[in-house]
Amino acid sequence: MIAPKTALNRLAIAALTISLAPAAEATDQGKEAAMTEIRVIFGEKTLTATLDTTPVTQDFAALLPLDLTLSDYHGIEKVADMPRKLDTSGVPDSYEPKAGDITLYAPWGNLAIFYKPFQRSRGHVRLGAFDGPIDMLVRNGDFPVRIEVAD
Image (cartoon, rainbow, N blue to C red; front, side, top):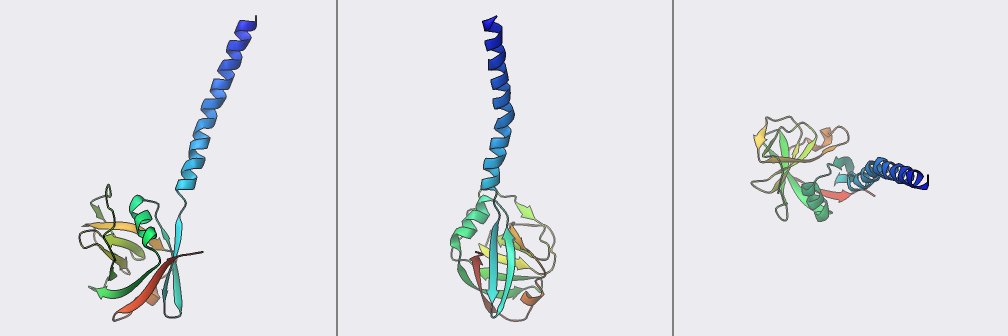
């Protein structure tokens, strides 16, 4: 009689352990998947954005704070040279940018902030997106910005 009860107890403990394992993994993944909030500051204005949770965005976030100069490029995006190329290992080879997207143009290693949508193109890697309208970024000429992690 003791042996069957012990076997049942072991089975119950094993089942409980198995059922709890995915919950523990999800909790661990949730910690890893925390989104990074950033601020883009220019003049007296500040815009907020959220970075995706990928290795390339973690590499980007490690560079922050960054002081960059945004320049208009073809009337659809603002671009800036980065201090170094980001690690793009394992990223998709193309992306279709939308207005408000923050991307990396991997072949040149520069930051590209789209204020108009653009066609799917090789080399663009999404880093994140602005949390609201970015109309204030759409202005002529070059201007300095500071990108930093939000508190």
